[in-house]
Length: 517
Ligand code: BES
Ligand code: MN
Ligand code: ZN
Image (cartoon, rainbow, N blue to C red; front, side):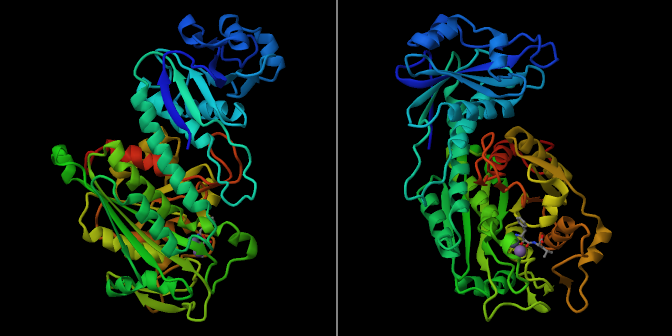
């Protein structure tokens, strides 16, 4: 993982020096607009020599930059390589000054580390004393996140790993950058862990392996405990939904329950308790209601929710989260084996409710039902679940925005604000009481699907709502955002870990039930 640090001058040996550029205030794009950029003070140029020094002291002609295809307004980047080799100077567009937020710093930082090219080494980013778009700490965190996530790659399965990207980013400026950088790198590091878990093929990331990887990561962390339940314990605990889904698989299920307890000096905050629940289907074939081949190709990512909530837990101690956090993640494959549940079968969930399974591909809600019961039994202040739950979420909101549902408006609003700050957008959907009819069963307390082509995301959440026992609860359906089909911004093809940074931000700001944000 890329390292980030702060310095007062550009250190020797960097391969690229990034200069953030803001498009002028004229509001008409680049044409005729003045460019503003940072870091052309003698301090910052420090060790810079050759091409870099020239550019830092002598701004190139703006018309020429435009001819090179660089548009500060559109947020692109332009690498100018000096005749005498590195370092190159990378202009990174932050867009217009108006509306500049952390998200643009994340994208700019990712653009720099990518434009720096391959072959390792360090990049430097020149930053202004009073950065636009947020406090120094916020902008620092965003820069670290963009750089760590922008250099992320999953190469473990290539016989010849491609040459690496830069390994270090030095943020060059005055002021208090170090702590924000540290916090951003921690949050992005948690996301990196989640991405690795998600990107690992399902054949190698069975429930047993996932549980062990998480146990390894969490054990030894301050204030953190981790329990792994095997199939016998899962049966003893009457987790009927987990058992029903696991029946069709040769691999046994697991459930991980991990807790972070903040140090005593947090006083009242330490008594607040948030439970995170994550869907951990390590492969979703659909079961006997088998998916078509194309729909199955990405289904190793159906454990994203579990990876995300457990990664969040792994960063709580280092980030100094002040509230108690429990993460619960049921893990199983969804397979069509000889003992698989059959469409029409009924199981009894942990809370005693009976569920008729008319489509075995609607399996996420079954394992979440039991996990939400376990969560509500802890009587926490809030429950938040994260799941790649419905294709209908992708239809409604696409891959850039997750669906947010729940029974508590204040909780949902704090999550939405946290998501906005994290660049992980959440949008609310309703849970209308009368839609409860959609999941009425002919023979049991409920069925596991709603009406064909109607409100699929809501129907799934309606079922979940029946297992939280009145505890303030929010549900994030991340079916679309959990995976990216392209490498752009600070995302790379594959798992995105969408939700890790929003949840860490949410937990860092959480002050209890009824808190508006
Ligand atoms: N894991 C899928 C949802 C999903 C779809 C995630 C696409 C990511 C991308 C979930 O288990 C599922 O199969 N849901 C079904 C439910 C239906 C059978 C009621 C769906 O949405 O099609
Ligand atoms: Mn499914
Ligand atoms: Zn699924």
